[in-house]
Each structure stands twice: as structure tokens, then as C-alpha cells.
Length: 286
Image 1 (tube, helix red, strand yellow):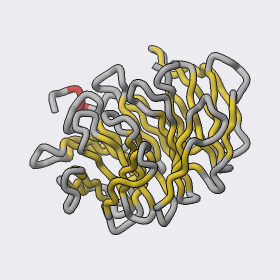
Image 2 (cartoon, rainbow, N blue to C red; image 1 turned 135 degrees about the vertical axis):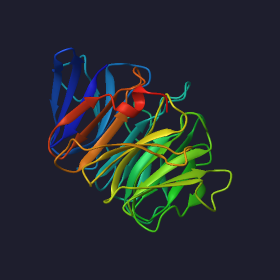
Image 3 (cartoon, one colour; image 1 turned 90 degrees about the vertical axis):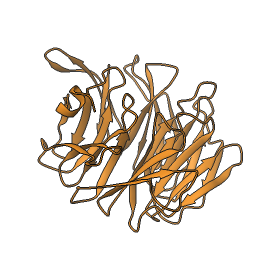
Image 4 (cartoon, rainbow, N blue to C red; image 1 turned 180 degrees about the horizontal axis):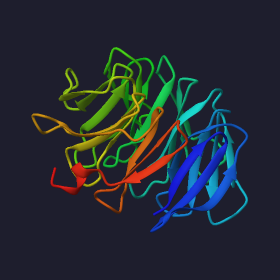
């Protein structure tokens, strides 16, 4: 498994081993890198996005880079995601210019631009189930579901009364998404009835920066916050908070589950550290 760190214009490819982390490759960029996504059909290829409004295509097997730069957004690009469904190799990007753009990495320009959000876009995420369908979360307090084939928005959900910084799609339920917002709450949304959230998780004391569903447990998710903590939840339980991890001294801003190990998590922080660990709640049945 390879891990990636980004920020301050540097992309680091790290290889975990028994003694820790080994620096495999380092790439520099002229502006801060805000997000990164791996190709779904080439283990060496990834895309980053940056504060100068561009996306960059990299090949970790080559020391030089990037292979290509896509510059169409007019403000910071805060989110990028590579489609997970077979049969399509598409990338979606969300920007502070209030637009979402669709890309085919083999083509030098965007395929489509999606408009409708009324504030900065913080998060864009493909459905792992439905080809051509993705979600976006914005400072306009809405979660939106888009259809590439229709080139427009399918559903608009006024999900919070605060800026929404993150969203993710459940790996086990095509109708279930989660949002994390500046109001410190996580909310689950069933696309078949979006009038009320199907769950709300409270406990963070500052804005929630990122939320991710587990790829191994249908009702488990994790969130990280500007309160310096990472929290693990099981929304199907009466007492949903499984564990609170406090091992950073600054804002926690990145988080993901391992796709290889059911118990492994990686997170990162403004304290300039990345942590790879097995939280206790994942080593016992949830």
C-alpha cells in the first residue's frame, strides 16, 4: 500500500513498511495541493488539485512530472475524485469558483461544467454504485446529487444550516450519503427521502473537515475535525460513538480507511504529521 501526503506544493508518495514510512517519490508544485485521487486502472497514476485552479496528472513510476496539467477553474480547486465504477475513467473536480468540472484524463480539456452551487465547493465524490453519478458539498449549505448523462443536478438537499466541508457515499448502500459541516454535526441522507436526515452524529466541538465511510463495515464511518480529534462511529447503534482518537496537536484535516486492512486508518494534521494506526474499535466486532 502506498500513502500520499500533500500540501505546500509538495506531493509525497510514502511506502509503509515494518520500520515505518519510506519516502518513495517526491514531486513539487508551484502552489498548495489540496486533494489527491488514485487512478482506478493504473496503480502508478494519480491526480492532484491545487490553489492555482489547476489539476495535475502524475505517474509515480517516473521521477519527472506532471504528465499533464488541466487549467480551467478560476479559483482554488479543493476536491478531486476518480470514478470507481468500471467502464468509465472520469475525474470530477470541485472549486471555490462554485463550479464542478468533469474530466477524462486522456483529454486535455474538461468534458462538462456543472453550475448551480451558490458558494465555494469543498467536496466532490463519485457514487461507488451508480455510473455517472456524483455528489458535491458546498459552503451554500447544500448537498447536491448530479447525473453526468443529464449534465445537471438531480437532487438538492439543504443538509445543514452551515457550510458543508465534506461528504461521502456509503460503500454498501447506493442511497446513503453522509455530510460533515461547520456546525460540528454529521448527518446521514437517504436519497429516497431527503426531507430529514436518517441519522445525526454529535460530539465534535469544531468544524468537521472530512468524513469517510468504512469499506469493510456497512454502518461504520470516521470523521476528523478542527477540534484535533478523529472519531469513529457506528450509526446503527443507540450509542453511536465508538472511539475518539486524540493524537494530533493541530487541526486534523485528512482521513481515510485502508482498502487492504479492515482495521487500518491513516490521518494527517496541520501539525505536519501523518498517523497510520489500528483504532481499538476496529479490531473488535463493531
